[in-house]
Amino acid sequence: MTQLQSARKGIITPEMIRVAQRECVTPEFIRDEVARGRLVIPANIRHLAGSAGAAPNDAETRILSRPDAARDSNPVDRGNGFPQKEVREGILAPAAANSKSAAGGNGHSGNGHHANASTIGNSSFDIRHSTPTGHPGHRPDAAFWANQTVAQRWAVINDPNILRGQSAPKRLDPMGIGRMVTTKINANIGASPVKSDTALEVEKLNWAQKYGADTLMDLSTGGNLLECRQAIIDHSTIPIGTVPIYSMIIGRSIEDLTYDDILKEVERQAKQGVDYFTIHAGVLLENLHLIRKRITGLVSRGGSLLAKWMIVHNKQNPMFTLFDEISAIMREYDVTYSLGDGVRPGCIADAGDAAQIAELEALGELTQRAREAGVQVMVEGPGHVPLHEIAWNMQIQQKVCDDAPFYVLGPLVTDVFPGYDHITSCIGATEAARAGAAMLCYVTPKEHVGLPKADDVKQGCIAYKIAAHAGDIARGIQGARQWDDDMSKARAALNWPKQFEIAFDGETARALHDEDLDVDTDFCAMCGHDWCSMRISKEIQEFASGKAEGFQPEKKAMKSPGLTPEQIQLLAHRGKKHDCHSDNVADAQEAERVQREYVQVGVSGQ
Ligand code: SF4
Image (cartoon, rainbow, N blue to C red; front, side, top):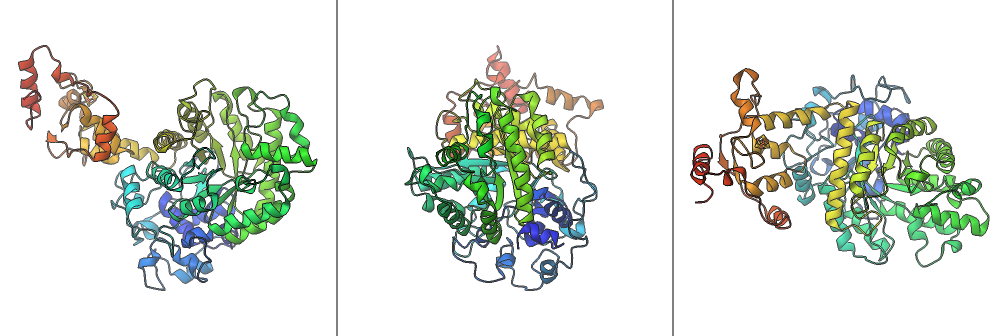
């Protein structure tokens, strides 16, 4: 039974419970969102089991898939506060199948759905994150928040005992995609015919997970695709997506693709444990004439390949023709549809044209067919869109696709900054997240110009975490803003260790701070002591800036804990260290006096 089928029957699955914990909402809220199709949990039963492509052992696999289950020998209560048998049979699901959530509209009220102590706060759910509490702030119910920091994520990736599979090194930690929960980001990786290396792709996976990717797509078109895909699935705790048509044409031309080839490849990848498939079934023969007026035609690889097949054979898109058969395979393994936008605009000039809208209408119909088949579905979107048209794109997708989660690529808001397209697209992604996109597919600096390396993956992920979080704040996602407010309190208190702990990428922030001044004191090298407005504000008692309880530094000044080898390497790439303000005051003796008086743990120039 898929997550969608379970939700419709009123069953709260272990995966729904896990998603609820990560989103700080109730399991019933997640079940309700899944039942109405507004949230998906991409979780192939093979990836959940960590079975590395082998068949799951027995019927208990779904239960064993819970992250704490391997360490929990109690067959009745596996640690989440619910008797497991009752969870599986849906006894604890209080609402009727398909009941509607009280929350509605474009925003996220969170009211009535937020987890309380009886469901999550007191849970003994024992996933061993490096720090016992996550963000926002140190709220106990945010311990497993979806937006774990880089340090927390890295500890999980490197913990050999966490989320172990039955035979694979890792297994899936379920997550949810929907506009009523935190906005997610996807990272694309993949070998190309020009450059392929499975170990390198696994390294990119680790970088993507470390820097915030919630899902990852393996878009490999070169090398040993089967081996590379399996290695990625086996090392991943986040859902893995693919575009199966890429593998279908290895060793043959698109014209030779048969229905049998398509179904066999879909089944092969489902068995491997792929969690979601991009299927370009909305590119229809009767709509192809609409692309003639475009500047950039079809920019989707899958879309262009299928268009060629249709023109050569003068037949309907085989993905559309086989949609029900593909759905049956996906249902068996609970693979989620990501209905591909094969006709997405590839430049600003083509955005919002008749071809794009015709495909969207087809995707709306396919969304209903997938749901009727019991398969979870999300919908992919553009691409390149001018900033002022992005909200409109989000609104029509919600309407046409009946609120299925919208998974957008960028979109890029201008076409003239190659080399910086992680920024041009991040601007569009922020607006998309604000207007209701559920997942943002990242773009790296290598977009349009080359194959991303590990550092490009980092740059893309960070840009998109910013977009997703900014969107969450704007949409009022419960708790998102609290994270920022905690950072502001630490910043006002000039509590550097706290700032780096709260920061999403504290390791980079710490390295940049120490590049100029490796002392944590009541100013930094940006303005220096005499010009530090934060410090001056703290001194003006009546404004009480920087006095928040729990955010005071242990000492007024203390030596930095020192940099890791990775941080030292990061700084080495940045060239010569900047002098700090106190190095450059006109009077050297005065500079030393300031340092001696305020820093007290070391004086520059000595
Ligand atoms: S020196 Fe300037 S940048 Fe640094 S903490 Fe003070 S006000 Fe902020």
